[in-house]
Length: 333
Image 1 (cartoon, rainbow, N blue to C red):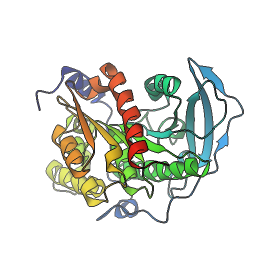
Image 2: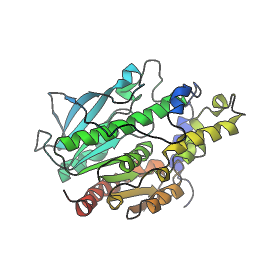
Image 3: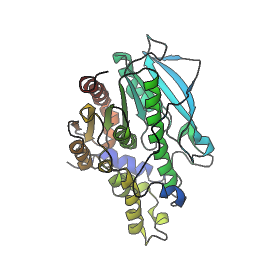
């Protein structure tokens, strides 16, 4: 697709000290939950969200925070309490029925600031809402002793991904029970991968705005620039060295490959954004996701992973708006 963008190399150098999985593989019983395929339990159930009584204005939209008890078993105590932030049109102070997205965070993204800046203008202009989820083990849900967003073990990371997925599906069910008839999922990078998986596993037709994520995340963790931050020397103990560690990590992350799961109920309502010079996500995997989800649309940006968010926020908002409009045409309420 092209040479890797210089911004991606710069970020990888800045993040190389953030050693992922310095604690090793973690709990084998947790890892066993992801092999050989990722499977969820019963149909997602709505969550009882305790909303803050305070709704604050931020620019041309409203912000409201809420908490809930996570449906994911095995999370640390600090992570079992989920945190969400609703971005709502300023002219309406309640959660009235409207098109709603659930937005998932990218790797290392703690808090709501980045996604609030990204989606706030869309909420203000379109009248739709966005529900931002704080990832388990990040930010307000970070367990004691964890340094920032550097997940300590592989099993912790997999548990975080499972929590993102289950909570996303339950939040979609919650919004549906509240009367929101058009729903969607969105995310960038890791958030995009989990959003795509949620779209595939959702029992409902939903819109999907997938940014810088593809059919598989294996490349990102074993070959791409993110892999520079992974402590493969630590993981290689007992695995035949770093090569064996990369092979085992690839097998674990392959459980979430999209070609191992069903196609979304409305693949026509998916808009996928890829970066031609991405050093973190293989552009080929983005193309393969588009080909797997027949009827989806792929849009290419001439930038890298970092530049997708820093330089093309407008293109991401347009993709989200268009995906929701495609859902309206293909699966009317």
